[in-house]
Image (tube, rainbow, N blue to C red):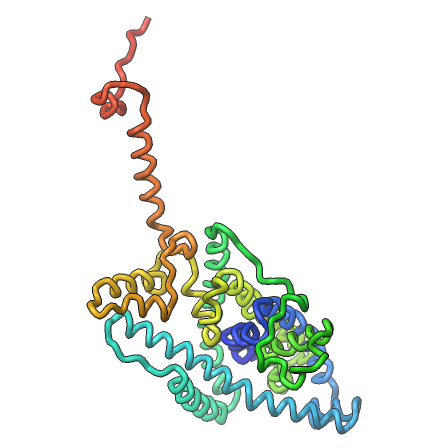
Length: 368
C-alpha cells in the first residue's frame, strides 16, 4: 500500500501545478491531510462483518445507484493510477539516461515518451506476474521498494531545509485562494466558458479535484485488511495512521519544498519529473547532480559546433552560484582569500617590510 501511495509523490505535484497553477503544493498538502478522514472511512467499512466488502456497505447505506458509481470510480482508479505510476517512473529513467549520455558525450538520446510507454508495459507485466504468486511471496520486493523510497525521502527532508537556509530569499507558493489559481485550458473541462469558474467555492473544489490524484493508493487498505494479523482492527488503525503520516511527509511536504526551491520560470520543465527537478536545484557540491551544470558548461566551451547555447536553451542552467547554491564549498576558500587580501592592504601606516613580517613574535620587555 505504501508503494502505491508513495508513488504519487513523483507525478502528482507536477500534474496538479500544470492544471491549477503555482498554488498546487498547498492543495496537495491539503489532500494528504484529508487522507486521515478517508482512512477513518476505510477503517469503519472494513470492520463491518458483511460479505461483499465495501460495495455491500455502500449499497446498504446509500443505495444501489451510488454503490454502482463508487464501484465504477474504483475500477477507473485501478486502471488509471497504476499506468500513471509506471509511466512516471519511465519518464524519470529516460531523463536520467539522457543526462548520463550528455555527461559521457555519447550523443544519442532515448525518446522519453516512447521509452516511458515501453517501460510501463514491461513493469506492468512483471508486477502482474509477481502478484499471481500471492501477497506473502511478493511482499519482500514491495518492502525493498519502500526502503529505497524512504532513503530518498530522508535525503530530501535533510537537504531541502539546508538549501532553504542557504538561499538568499525564500518564497512560499501563492496562497490557495481563488485569485491565485490559473487553470490550464483543458483543466476546466465542461465548466470552460460557463459562469461556474467565477464562483470561488466551485474554483476551490475544481482545484482540489485536480489534486486528488496524490491520494491514489488508499483503496489498497481495504484489500490488505484480510491479510492483516490479529487483532485486525487495532493493526488496521496502526497501518492507516502510518500510511497517512508517510503520505503527508513524502508527498505533501516534499511537493511543498519543490514549490519553494525550484524557480518559477523553470518548474514547468519538470512537470513529468518534479522530484528530479528538485534534486537538481538542491544546494551543495556533489559528485552527480550538483556537478552537472558545470560539466555542461565545460562541454559547451569545448564544442566547436556551438552547442553551448543549445544546452543553455534546452535545460536553462543558471550560472549564478548564489541562486542555485551549487558552489557552496568554493565560497569558503574564496572568502578566506578575500579576507587575507583585505587585511594585507589595510594595515596601519608602517613600512612595507614590516607589513610582511607583522606575524613574527614581538620582543619581550625585560622583567622588573
